Length: 190
Image 1 (spheres, rainbow, N blue to C red):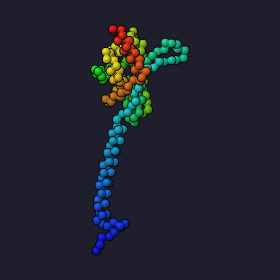
Image 2 (tube, one colour):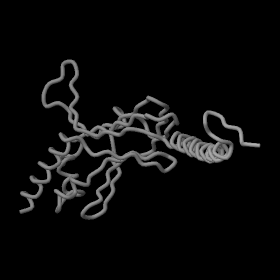
Image 3 (tube, one colour):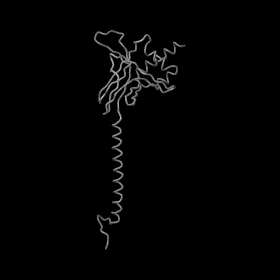
């Protein structure tokens, strides 16, 4: 008796093709499980966008000179709630340094702050709250003597209560003003 033929293919060839079908099904199952684990793990991590820049505040009837601030802003872009506990700065090069940023309590969000999806918090650090301008003080205490490298590696940070740290490079306007303050401090030291 001869082997049956279907669509011009004999039975041993069909058996071979069906053997590969099981392998492809197994590979597809493993790939689906890997994608599911990736998506589950990705949604388990908090996600937020941090920005920091130089701002002035102008209100009705206000006159120059307007109050100036360094403003940190965090927006929760993930599905999980975030509890923010601290803001600060980090420099990685040429010498690793970190600093906690103090801010104006009356204008800023209170810390700790709970942020659900889409919510934001802002913190205003006044530039003229001390005898010495904040830019000059920051340049002197954190950025000099190698201020070009320090500015290149300068990052703002927002810390969550579970150990996640959100970082951002300062906006160009703030970096330019910090560079000017570093040059001013370097010239005064000479």
